[in-house]
Length: 258
Image (cartoon, rainbow, N blue to C red; front, side, top):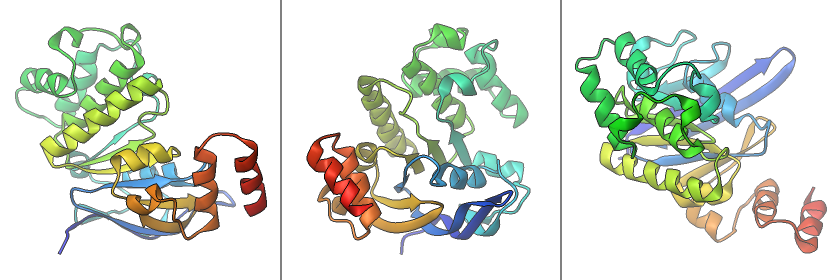
């Protein structure tokens, strides 16, 4: 029987009078890469932020690696699950060197051999030691995203929470980051929860996905069914049609199903 790494049951998040996430339920198996898909404002990033402990007002139940989440996330869970943000430039302090960015995590968690850890994790994400004392503005977008992934990995988590990790990158660089994530998953036996609006990314990296619309999960499916374009829900069909790019036939199909 497959062990469950992430479990979400009837998760509901409200901001003032609006419902951002409405009774979302799904689970991610250990070692799996699972996608949360939907248009902007569908609630998928909110789910990720709850699991990362960045949102504390929510109801329902959630667990990470067998640890039930509460409104106050214990620091020990940071060693288990780490979040990689969407915009690598915004998530890195512009006045801090990469050495300081990575070193802060080792200091906060009192990890031994910080120098060795920093050099090793830079190598693991495809950056050499020469990047250690550079600033974020001296790096390309893809290199900054590699640093953001390295910052998450330096605590040696078993779960990565990925918020649109390729959306701010050029198409060619997107492929490099996806290949990196696939390699890291195999080398470190990682479980990944990937939030994205890009169905091609999901088909490339994930085994299963959940489709969100207006805070609700409308469908859960495996990526083989996604590749065959055989969803059950009309909204998922709209996403598949939209992902093919604009033409009159696609636009007419979306308009017909709206």
